Image 1 (spheres, one colour):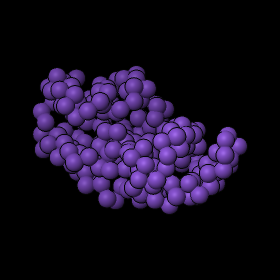
Image 2 (cartoon, helix red, strand yellow):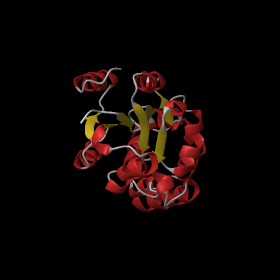
Image 3 (spheres, rainbow, N blue to C red):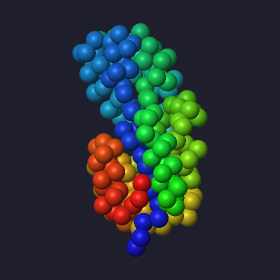
Length: 206
């Protein structure tokens, strides 16, 4: 079956989730950056935010409690992290052009992202690539996160696209595997050049 749609993840694909650079700019030590990476960014609490079960203000309280119990009080650092969190992502300069080239070539272009609600409210209005997309799904608004198959099926429910006619591009293998199980062609994103090569191999003109 021919490919008609290209579905993109956001963080790590269209946007740099540059949390380490962000924390260094806040003045955090390398040790604290690594601790926050492990105990905040890759914590179940962040996953709860992605799922829409936890808002940022409450998450900050829980982060403080978690860090206090694990090693030491970091209340001021958590406050600083939360207060400036708009700067935790940067749109890649190629993103809008990539989506536009695919759309100009006749493909449907969609976005499927795990993203906390508060952060989506802050960031998405400024993403230059967003107006190019034919539709998007944000996990926190749907209360489902990748790799749950339900969130992929929303692409069909909301936009009427056939998953077997769609390519899904994501930077996490677990999400690619879930897409493959539903008949989508998955491309694991490592960098733009590799992605373009993979799209070309599928006969997709960019």
